[in-house]
Image 1 (cartoon, helix red, strand yellow):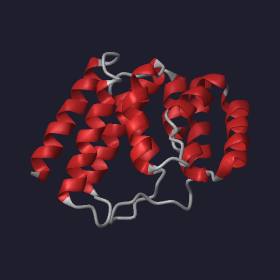
Image 2 (cartoon, rainbow, N blue to C red):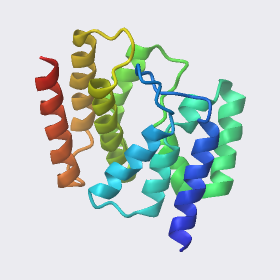
Image 3 (cartoon, rainbow, N blue to C red):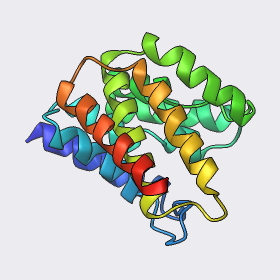
Length: 185
């Protein structure tokens, strides 16, 4: 029961942090649906590591609910106290530095993903799967077909550095990648 407690605690924490946020899509879907979908994707492909599932639920809280060094430090300390070092480190591994320009953040994801922990690599793949599905099914307002395709191709380059830990998850990414490109082209 301790495993479920940690997962539900992470879900509640994430829901509270994201409660006023929506996804970028036209449908204005509550943001919390995204980390839930990322966690579900991992579970659907056989991942049962409680710290990985909790990290998936928390993966965007630092990046998307803080502003400035102090808030990041305070939230990181809170995550450490509530969920432990494994989860904090995994969340921080997949957190972009929002002070950098978007293109630099994207370049760094491609460059740094091969150096991530196994947990962070699996999380990265599940996150990219869910982002691609969202871009195809509920695209961000104003995104052209070219921009959607560019995102999908970039996500593939990121995922290339994370493969080999869960072959079913890798194969599902490939399936989503190809089907999404077919829908858009």
